[in-house]
Length: 118
Image 1: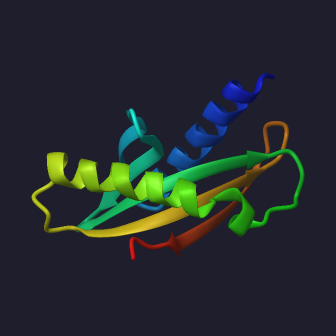
Image 2: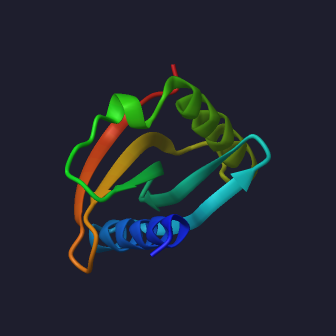
C-alpha cells in the first residue's frame, strides 16, 4: 500500500474514532496554499483541529512529528477556518492522533491539546 493511501486510511480511522466519541467531522484535508489540516471536527462548542500521523512501528515522538514550523502552519490554517466558517464563539483545540499498525487493526494514541496557538 502506498504512503498516500495508508495516510488516507489512518485519517478515516481517526474520523471514525472521533464520531464514535460524539464529534461531527466537518472537514477532511482542509487545504490552503500555506498548509493543511487533516481533520476538523466539533462537539457542542468545541472545535478541534487534528493532525494525523501514521507509522508502521510503535515508536512515536510527538515533538519530532509535529515540528514548530508544522504547528505554525496548522494554526494559520485553523485561524483562517475560524474566521471564514464560524461565528467565533467556539473553544478551539489542537490535537494529534498517532496511528500505529499495518493491517486492519491499527492502534490509536490520541493526544488532546497537543499544542497551542500561543
